[in-house]
Image 1 (tube, rainbow, N blue to C red):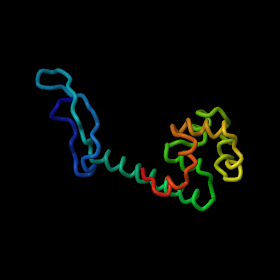
Image 2 (tube, helix red, strand yellow):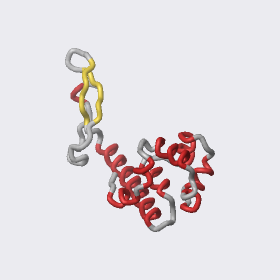
Image 3 (tube, rainbow, N blue to C red):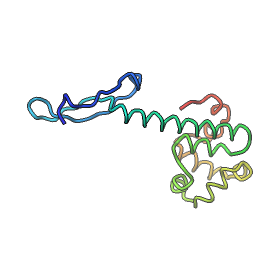
Image 4 (cartoon, helix red, strand yellow):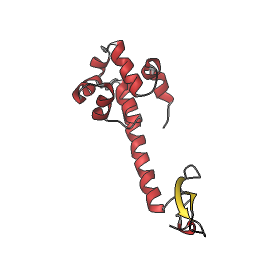
Length: 139
């Protein structure tokens, strides 16, 4: 792709937040780095996907705050994980992670297990368990 052909369809759509790095040839056929806001269709699909993710995180937040789920569900959704992915990080079967998503089982977890979950989310156990932070956090 030539430098002039790098897509710059709709910069207003992303409000100047994101640009992806692309490589294109310049006038002397050497590759050069170009920032691109992408194609309009691609940007629309990405925006819709992020809106869906935000809805899932908000839904998980509400379930945690109302006691329907453990805080594990919130952190899993926020980190774009599912029980299979998270189970791989902490070394248990996916159905165990599903059990831990229920407050009854989560509240009985050992310090060691909590540390494994916190490590998977790249945070401290204290931050992971802090309900007040999820009330105000945003994606």
